[in-house]
Image (cartoon, rainbow, N blue to C red):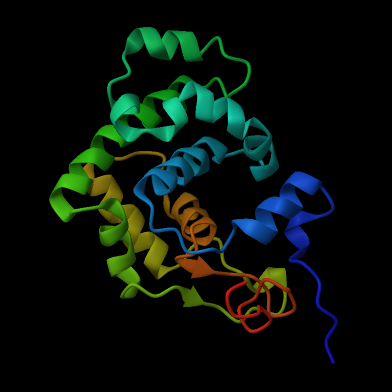
Length: 193
């Protein structure tokens, strides 16, 4: 019998463990939460996820609790203010990207009824459940993340490369990459848990 243990990437940091156990890989259909994860995954590009996770509350404050309408309305004065905010990653390109992507996000909501509807249509509304044994098997991108990345770029978003989008799909449960030996893998979870 296999001993169950968390996916190794979360280590023993309590914040990482809580994120792994209660968020990562859980299907998200709420547009505001999807926008949050899109902004955070874009901010993470080139950095470690734990860095962004530790700054998450600051991002919530700085980006109006990820209300896409309020973020879309941000202007150059807001960008300059955020560039002085040590609580977030002070990168002009990433800050401008969050604002730009909010505007595109709102347009996609109008066009498709919701961003979630558009996103989940790529997997027929059902999470893709992988069956990885080792972390090394898990890819950094796939044909699905390539396709979604390309579509988002075509709509006008940036900081949405295939690797960023694959991480976004994992985070929002569109793809569930919990290892088969992880207690969070669906084959080990109790119904309703």
